[in-house]
Length: 213
Length: 213
Image 1 (spheres, rainbow over the protein chains, first blue to last red):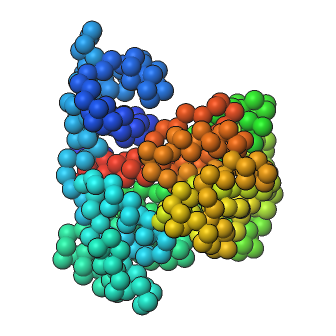
Image 2: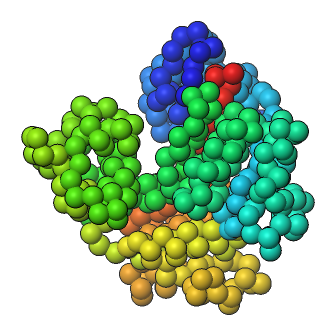
Image 3: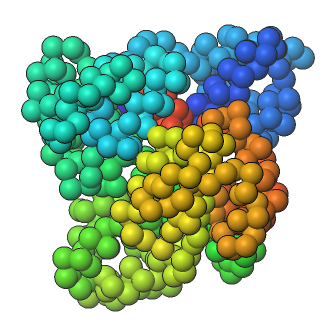
């Protein structure tokens, strides 16, 4: 992960919390709420009010003493910081259940993340459509990514195939990989990788359950 | 989250890394590797050797100076710490694509996490089988959980329904909730919740991509 354009170094811990702030602000915005105090945010989100003020101060003061935060502006600012002020073109690799679930998820999610195509090695799946998205032959993936300026590759394959897929995605020129296979990938340093390791998440849950018995 | 039985408080950051250690140790074990040094682990996992030694020292010394770690023992110890020395019975709520993907995932994953049943509100899906698991009527979920001593409920519903599902799961007596809906749930404090917020993960990826351009 590179942070070369970041003027001040913001900790990953703070960045990790921003999507959560954004989610709550989005709900408030939809309900027509225009301003909110750090105390009110605290009650909703569950962080302390001082933590919230500290987090949001990292990006310049969005709040005014005695007034609170402007919900719309804060939502927009956080969106910009997260890089959500642009659209991302994505391809999914692997049209199994997980790939289909992700295709559905992004379809209904209606965000700036658009799935352009799905690539699959199994000839029985090549040629079908999932939510109006073509399932194409994996062999054609590199040229498709090059021709269509794809930003993100989503790996929904088995762990055995994941590194080979990551190599091809890197070669084809994506800037980010969203990896659902339970392996840690090796990619060139200019490519960002975000892992969703389901087994790790389940094991973390088991840990907390065994400790609270 | 409660940690009442934990004799020394281990930070969540360390615990979060344990599933990853376990994953690598499991691969080594399958390859027949019997011992490994912190330096070798470091090259594989990507943490520094001193970080690894520090992490593993939290649980008593598994390593011996000049010998390294016993792969099998360390794998077993970490498994025990994570609460993986027992089986967990789970139900999935929501038989859509995501619920089906999770059902498949756990089926092929062949771990101590077993999906016993899937519950669904849509009558067209009730009665089918997914990987030999019955899809049952959501109305019957509470009594099923009570009668079958289910440990974990997996929420694969829309965000609008997720809190209601969490309330019913809590009432029925699960100890843990694995939540895939993009909301933060309110549950009694004795119930552990682990969230897989896909949108947060995607936004975090976008952040890193926009910073490394």
